[in-house]
Image 1 (cartoon, rainbow, N blue to C red):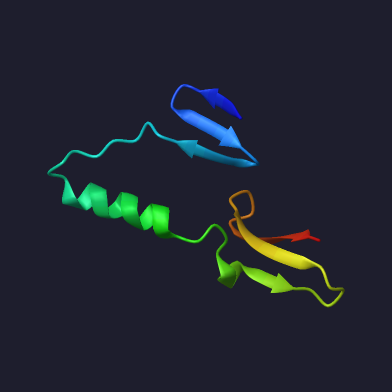
Image 2 (image 1 turned 90 degrees about the vertical axis):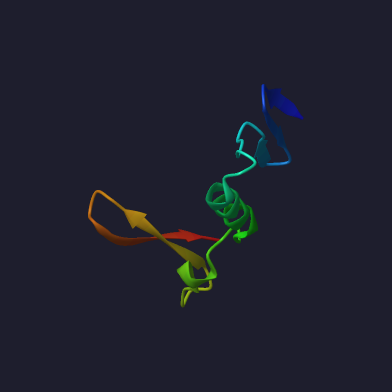
Length: 72
């Protein structure tokens, strides 16, 4: 397990513990909780291709349109 200050990495995952929220900032607390509760992969962006591979749709700012990146 590697550690850089308030960031720890293990098994391909990382945890950044340097984010703070003031005790009376309910909006920031809600945003942080929503961020932590979101799924790691947006299921609406994943499709199975006819050849059996899986594609994940990402935003490509160079073309200002959706692009697909195929993965196995």
